[in-house]
Amino acid sequence: MSSPGIITYPLGGITYDAEDAAAYFAGRTSGVYSTDIDFAVAAAADGSTDLTVSAGQAWMHVSRWVGLSVTMREAQTLTLPLADSALPRIDRVVLRYDATSRSTSLQVLQGTPSSEPAAPAISRTEMVYDLCLAEVSRPAGQTALTTANLTDTRTDEALCGLMRDGVTGIPMDELGRQALAKAKETAALCDKLLASYTGGYLGIWPVTLPADGWAECTDMPGYAYKQTAELRAAREANVPSAVPSPETYTVAVSAGLAGVCETKNGNITFWAENVPEGGIQMQVELLGPSASTADTGEDTLGDTVLEDTTL
Image (cartoon, rainbow, N blue to C red; front, top):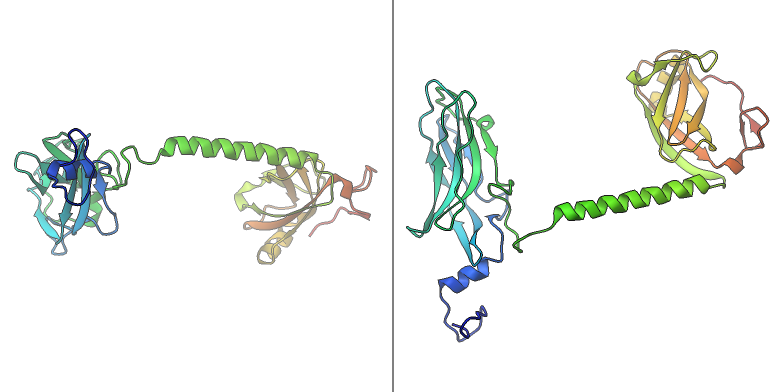
C-alpha cells in the first residue's frame, strides 16, 4: 500500500489490494473492447431458440473509484425462455456483474409480453451492473430464432458501448460543433473569393442532370424544358461552357440539349427540346468575367461568339 490516502499504482516492492487495481481500471469507460470479436451474440445454427455469445473482454465502470476487467475466454451458449403463446415481447442479453456473489455472468432479461412490447430495464448500480449485448425480438409462439430477431446493442453508449480510456471519453458533440463552425467559416471565405474573382479559368466541375429533374419552360425559344442544378462555385458573372460525358452524349443529343447554359449564384441552368430518356452527366468549365468580351448583346467566350446551337 502506498502512503495513506494516496495510491500510486503500480510500484515495485509495494503490496496492493483489489481496491487499488479497481481504482486503476476506473479510468476506463464501460463497454466491450471491440465489436468485431468481443461478446458478439448470434443465433444458434440448429434452428432452436439458443444463442451463442463469443469470447471477449469488457470493462465495467461501476462507480467513481471502481472499474472491473471482465474476460470470457471461450464462447458460451444461452437458452432463451419460451416465447409467450399470445403476445410478443423483447428480451435482452446482458453481461451482469453481481457484487454480492463477486462474479459476472451472461443472463437473459425477459421482457413483458405486450401488443407493443418494450425491452426490460438494465441495472447500473454498484451492486448489480449490466452491459446489454443484444436485444431479442420474440414473436408470439416463437420456436426458432433467426438473425433477423437480434439487434446488436454493443455500440449503444447507454446500454453497453466501446471501452475507451478516459471517463468522459471524446467530446464528440463539442468537436462536431467546432468542425461545423470551421466548415461554415471556410465556405464563407470561398464564397468571398469566388465573388471577387476576375481572372480567367476557374476550373471544371461535374454536374448531374437526372431524368426526372426537367420542368416545362417558355424562357428559351425552341426549348420546351429546362433544369437548374446546384453548382456552388458558379456566379452570375461567370462564362460557362459545358459538354456531356461520352457515356451520356447520345442521351443529350437525342433530347436536343441546348449548346448554351446559364449560371447564377450557386447554380447552373440547361435547356432541352425534349425530356431526356436518362440522366446526363455534364462537365462544366467556368471562366471569370474578364475572360469574356464587353457586353454586346451576344453570348461570347473570349473572342468567340457562341451561336444558338443545339447538340
